[in-house]
Image 1 (spheres, rainbow, N blue to C red):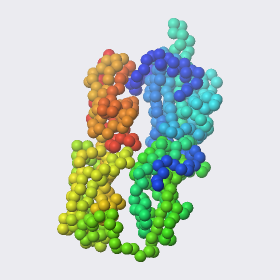
Image 2 (cartoon, rainbow, N blue to C red):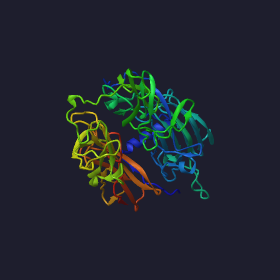
Image 3 (cartoon, helix red, strand yellow):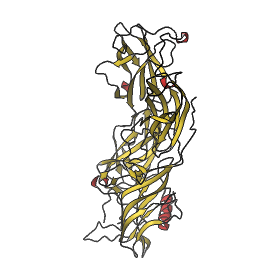
Length: 560
């Protein structure tokens, strides 16, 4: 008799489980500025590696282990030990046919599986183990081992293009018995009670993904877009991509590339980990940010004076390239500058009157900081000086705010510099954002002569509540609240997690409504007399302006 090691997670009826069993038995598992791109490459490709590859421990994004009808062991992964994803069929005292486990990989939003490989090891002592790619044509197992015709099989599996997912499964097979026409039996004996009916393990998955998503850009500002520029010019805009994310921004003058950079490394995820053939490899399902603010310093000193064609390109992680801006830039790097300000610029802002300035933060003040929502209001201080260090007094400086996930910049505060050029600006409480201190040389200028950026990362507040005691088989409700507002249209995802096997594991993704409230129904069908730990985590996405944060842990005890 096997010891049950995991609770049964149930959100559906027994009828669904029976249908799932029948499907498993059949092995058929179905599952100015131009604000839009003006030129786009063909569909791009990239490779995602997961779990463990060439002795390197990687993430598990895209894969999900599930239990179907009659599991006694939850699907496990051994990536940190140098192994892979494993599934087992060990029905023991469970009489449901086609009991087993599944690991499933689903491509990220906006992409499709275009190919790839993985190594599989299958064993069938009294069951069936297989690897399948539903959605391909034809939809048949890529590698299968079934009791009666195969004991063990292993090898490299080539994934077909067009598959909707990749499935790795181990199932027990039904055996007729007197009084019980369909009983799942394992090969366990008194001497060896833990031998599985079927096992499947996958290592070194390398999945080729394809997307037709095209990068876009909006909100173009900066000194590069002035009537004339010289030296190093600035360019600010928001880049977006509905596929694997914004990888690189390029600026071209007369077709010659003068700047190429990655605007946001996405905490190191947006870095090419090599190539597979000629295709770039990343270790994450969403390697680069789907939306990011771009601040580029564009050199123009080597460009001859005069009018030139200006093109701005954005490339995503799959190699799709869009020209998001096309226009003209006039450079005056060698002309004699005039000291007379146009009358439409208004009076000078500060004393002395300077075309450029320098904004510095007070010594010891961080430029990037993490804060809780209740402590997100803060005061920023610093000095305004000329490029040579002389103070600029009686100048107005502005505090601008751009909330993460938004392309809109708003003014939140102003201050006037003192005799030594010092200033103090108070930002109201808010979500994660860019806080930009800006100095304008003249009162009517629309392009800042100096800026100083601060990045505030604000953690979400999420709660979770549930009954302290529940009965086995009885549905109960988890519920909670996301605090702070700014819920994007369509809601915001909250991840409910269970503490199992010494680790926190995802139980369900739940959508919070526009008011931040969420609910999730759940029932235990195993493990009476056990107490389980749960928590909720606010899941950060491109339009929710808070960093991920977990709730306090709660405990639920299971009674008969």
